[in-house]
Image (tube, rainbow, N blue to C red; front, top):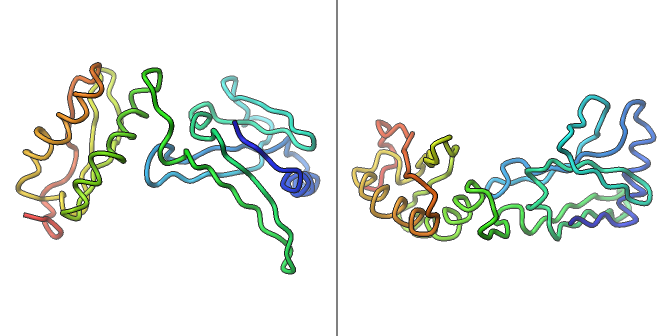
Length: 191
């Protein structure tokens, strides 16, 4: 899963020793599987531990992992390099924005993967993008368009003939797509 180097463990252990109530660190990814994914490390305190968390005891620290973030943290590296200004903690998570997906991945992960890798590169030619807001209980993908797609007169064609077709061809259990974009704002519309 994730590697936390000895120097990073030493640095984090020093920080933790200065906290009265920190039990270890929590490692998670905000908006995993999207272009906005951000890998984070925070103090983990009593009351913040969830039953579904994955816990790992490293040599010097204990770390808790949010279950939603675990697949995106594969091959991640946390390192600390000392320099004359003190040092810098770095986190590299190559799978944070584009997870490794397969037939066992969640529908949300498979949709985000297709949007990021197949749909958005095409929409970028017109300055547009689309992102997943949520997957409903009845397996509809709720999407939001941005950039040149927001308010574009061709968005219905793009939604049905492009985005929906691409997603449904590759995700058979998807019921369809729904657009929740406010298309009254035409300030950046391509058409």
